[in-house]
Length: 202
Image 1 (tube, rainbow, N blue to C red):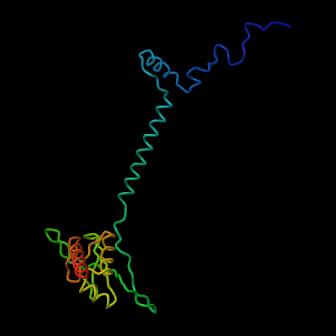
Image 2: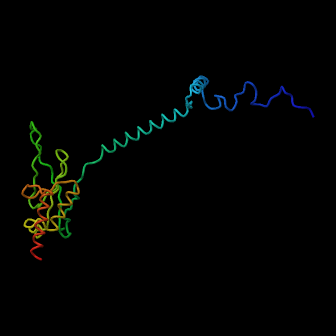
Image 3: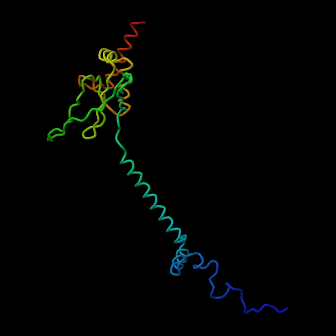
C-alpha cells in the first residue's frame, strides 16, 4: 500500500481555495476585510456589514410603523353623540325619542368666529350638542308627555338625569329647552335638592 503523496491535497484545501474563515466565506467583500482588521488593531470591535445592514432595516421598519400609527390616530372619527331613537310605525311609542337635528343655515362670515345658537325643536326637553363649528351635531331628546312634564318641573328626577348623563358620556353638552346649558354645577345643585327632600322626609 503506497503512502499518500505529500504533493496531493484534498479538494478545498489547495493554496487557492478560501478557508472557512476567509472573508469570501463569511460574506465580506475583499475591500472590507482590511478595514475590519484595522479596526481590530485599534481596539474596536469589528462589525459585520451584514449586521449593519440588518440594523438599518429594523430602524427603517420601526419608523414606518410609528408613522402609520400616527396617521391612524389623526384620522380617528369625532364623537358621534348618543344613538338616535325614533318611533316606528305600528309600534308602541318609546318612552324616549332622540332625533337628529339638521344644522342651521350658515351665517355670514364674521370677523370673529361666533358659534351659531342651538335650535331646539318643539317638544324637546333637552338637546345634546357634540362638537363645534362644521363638526357640530345636535340631537333632540324627547319624552312621552307624562315624563316630559315631570322633567320640566323636577329635572333632578331619575329619567331626566339618565338622559343628560348619556349625552355627556357621548362627549356632548346638555342644553335645556330654555337654551341654557345644564352643567356639572347644575347637576350638583339638583343633587343637593334631592338630599334636602330626603332629609325632610326622614
